[in-house]
Length: 394
Image (tube, rainbow, N blue to C red):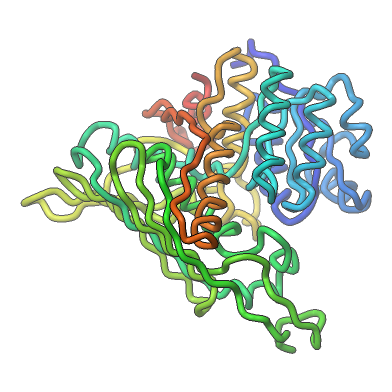
């Protein structure tokens, strides 16, 4: 690794999620050289630079104009994604963004077209699909342990309106449960089962919410999260498998989730796709149910040492960035958290909304390829970072 030139990188957006990204990009991945941070509020960028030892605080125009910065990580809110990504692509920068590309499908297609025209890499979260849990599940499927996949059943619930009292950004476009949380489930579904061919769905909006004094910082206001906060969809995959998906953001705050894949020879239970270490359980005839040992690293544990941090639960955020950086240096395609993967994730979610609104079947136009990471490399070999980054190289 020491013979490979690191990719000089800047982070744009220094909100809550930047804590784990900056820490990991600075300390966990060899391939990344994080040299600058940027935020609309300069004080926020300065605070993160001081906390994590980043050498430069820059404006967004300075990042775009900096000849020595190759890769930009966009951690702004969803409504700002389009403007930030487009600015960086037009400036000749590779770009990786937190979920999702934008809140508009046509804008996302435009960004993909710009990246293709300029020969730039464009990646997108969720990169939890590169964690130990989903990658182990993918290896089990690819090895044929459950035969041909026949169907899948996915569900998750949360009181998204109550959450929007605490996290105000949830009151904007992209704040409904299918987009804020459901994207992790869609990303995992696509990683494991491939592209979706057709979508049918029904949806329901969030209720108008009156702020509760206990949680709200602005009592007296009322709001309604835009879009469908409940989506129930039937999916047909190109592989021939069918699936049912239910996202319910209008229920209690006690999250319940399930992710079960049925095959001709067995059944696979997948853990929470919102985590890196979701437990994988295999059910085969006459052998009962067994936990499958992880075949990959990046299980979400903090291997960097030091005092426990409140953001440790976010695990290995940044795997997608590092994998794309290795693709840049190796000159290969980014067939993991790629622009094609991100666009299809987005189109499947929006397709659910459109199918629910029209009552007609939606047929996604986008397609993607998702390759598994190389197995057999782990995060904790030797009690430290281990050799997990080798799984991202090829």
